[in-house]
Amino acid sequence: MVAKIFRVAGISMVVGEIAVSADLMIVGGGPGGYAAALRGAQLGRNVILVDRDGEDGVGGVCLRVGCIPSKALIEVADHIHRTRSLGHAGIRTGDITLELGAWQQWKTRLVDGLTAGVSQLLRAAGVSVIAGQAQLSRPDQLVVNDPTNPLAPAQYFQFTDLVLATGSRPAALAALPRDGVLILDSTDALALQEIPRAVAVVGGGYIGLEIGTALAKLGAKVTIVEFCDRVLPAMDKAFARPVTRRLRQLGINLVVNATAQHFDGMNLHVAQSGSMVAIEVDKVIVAVGRSPNTEHLGLDTAGAVIDERGLVNVAGDRRATPHIAAIGDIVTGPALAHKATAEAEVAVEALCGQRAEFNPATIPAVVFCDPEVATAGYTADDAGAAGIDVDAVTLALVASGRAATMAARDGFLQLVWERNTTTVVGVHIVGPHASELIGQGVLAIEMAATLEDIAGSIYAHPTLSEQLGEAARLALGRPVHVPGRHR
Image 1: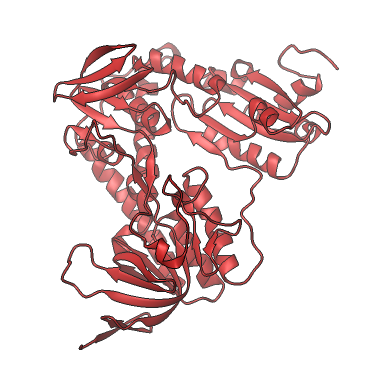
Image 2 (image 1 turned 60 degrees about the vertical axis):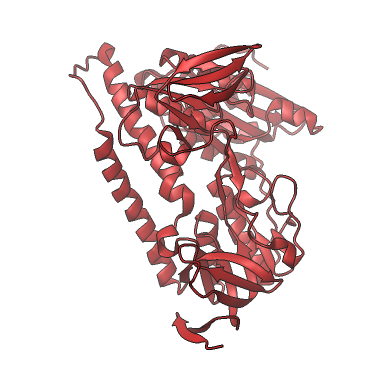
């Protein structure tokens, strides 16, 4: 056999069945993967990052077709809707519309700029990025194939250590097979060139609510179909109530306790309470969660275990075997970019012989709907189930002067604390900019702050952040801006 030899960042590689030595390899160029590559380079490792799309895949689903594009759409939709609805504050405008094709061009420039920044970081760190579909052929060997050219020779790497960060993809429904034209997944929805007249979103979780709310603000007639009895079924009911009120104010039709059966091109047929309901729509967006990308990794070859959900079993240091770690959406826990990034540091440090464990006090979760929902730590019910004796207080957003100036007073801030020590173990926010405010709650929980610590801090006025201190004072029996029983 004739082998073709070439070089990547100073590493000789042989195309064919002869494997070349590699130090630290990363599979997947998303937030977890590129963070792992950068941490490995910082620790002196020679790093090769493999992504299906090579340099074009850097940033992953989150940056390229998920988190960043969706928030860009949400931001624009919210600005348009707020401008239209502030007539009571004296704003007079003509008809404001969004040219979605022009927005797509802007979004592309935005994404390209961010991905170029990540690519530059990788190049500056000396990380080699190669394109291909990676699969384990032995416990210490990775074979990389070109998915676009089955005739291209494979590349074989014998690695010292490996981090798998292959992420996830939109979950599919057999009853609604994606065609990319009439039946869309979340990626397709963010690539629309025109706002649909009427659209059904199947799934009332965070993805469905974010996309559905944005499209409704842009003028589409939106129906959300949810299998459970309410939207945001994975969260506390209290968080869903103000969101549900807002959805109805926006004219969104909520169909709960329902199962989508099929789409005939004009009507989505839904089973609800023993009868069939036909919903006239132009398009259907399936947003029922995400599935881990683990089925073609060949992990059984290395002795790693994949559970019935397709997730890789890992230890606290994120290792599935002594020399293979897995992070992000392919391991247990919330499928969130910031979790993957945090796990990346732990996994690489463990593979470099350092003592490391992924054991955060909390991982915040955010829904960019209207109002925003952000949660960190225990709810009162969760804490009780875990055997922790807690108390809780809820401060309505109506007490916030800043919220009043924003005409956005529907929501609340809730504190949960351990009864004996008054240590804060949960912070939950529903309201404007909850996604930004939750950082204070995360820090409070990580630092084991008490109610007195929070109440004794000085917050700028007028800001939404003041509500954290006011909630702590309410819990201690000395509120300023709301009536409360003094202790």
